[in-house]
Image (cartoon, rainbow, N blue to C red; front, side, top):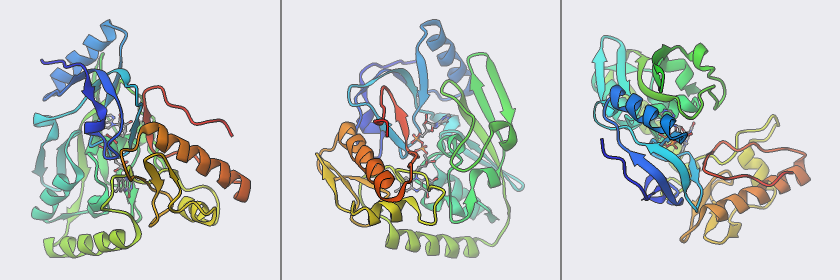
Length: 292
Ligand SMILES: Cc1cc2nc3c(=O)[nH]c(=O)nc-3n(C[C@H](O)[C@H](O)[C@H](O)COP(=O)(O)OP(=O)(O)OC[C@H]3O[C@@H](n4cnc5c(N)ncnc54)[C@H](O)[C@@H]3O)c2cc1C
């Protein structure tokens, strides 16, 4: 199996930032994933998976890890009765398309989540009242020691959270759906996409919601908007003028620019609302937010 070095993570993240990975591979089967995990373990090298990079901030000076991108049969879809068998690297959009064609509903919530099944399980992605925890029957998780099927409870799925750790790779998953006319699915997806377009900067390079919603009457976006942060810019990164819980790559942004904006946003949210915002975006490499 080919292991490359120097692959720029900026090419693999939706924000378009991030330096090189010290090692990079595209496994096509569970066996290849296990072999790669063992290869990394022998070298005491950390492992991370990149799905579509839509929830990732990767360090500008690179990441000292074996970075995997699942492909081949690990990015496939198969329908079996009411169950959608998907690879960990399958794009949500592809899975949803197949579900709709098969007349299976229950995955519509994922229509505007531009990631993969593995990335969705990792952080229990969700929208419009649905999430992976609600659709997932079980996921096959590979480690250097072997693979095991885990249920949502065993994965510890809760609001934008799982108990998965780097080195555990979601290679396959089964989604339990229910019969629904394709036309109904299509209409709901169209509706949800329109709502999304109205509210979020869907035509910009972003990584989705920056912060989780706090335990507060206002959402993270509303808190940041009330702090006057819409349009605030540091370097090439700016808080979206359309939705304050998004950071856009306005002009050759770096991860350091995005991180500086996040630090400023957290500082203001604490100062004006007494709210400690927790980031939703995942960090890859040596990245840290300043203490509040
Ligand atoms: C415009 C936009 C809108 C968005 N809207 C939403 C939304 O409504 N709701 C929502 O929840 N999110 C949203 N997001 C964020 C993002 O799309 C989701 O979090 C998505 O699930 C990330 O999937 P990914 O494959 O891109 O993961 P990545 O960003 O590539 O990775 C995220 C994390 O998952 C891990 N990971 C990825 N694949 C695997 C795997 N196979 N096995 C183990 N770990 C893995 C990575 O190591 C990393 O820690 C949005 C993002 C954008 C850009």
